[in-house]
Length: 150
Image (cartoon, rainbow, N blue to C red; front, top):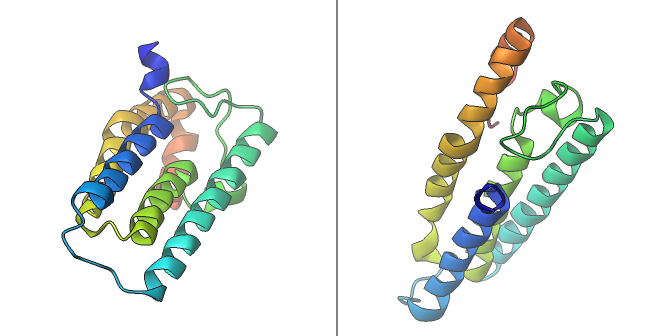
């Protein structure tokens, strides 16, 4: 049960819940501005969803797991993975940032770097260690050519 609770979507939902609570109970009279925050927020959410969908499609095409904490069968370096090593996590961070902008949750903005830090410590570093052991030189070459985030 704990394995399924410690998943990036659960952490994302928790951060989103905190942002929503901040808007509801502690608005503090702050605002990002009228239209541009809604537009940018929508673009970030939409972009995050597209990024995650592209990554999941590519991983399925290569018949490897999308579930964190499981050892991958294959190393995926094609498609969106040529641009970023962690497109799903980047998409999650974009969704969080986008909804914070859209909801005008100014005080919740620090949740974005905190969420990224949690993703790196709980998921990315352990996953990359597994990949480093399993795929050795191939992963080292890929990590050197492709950035972790952008």
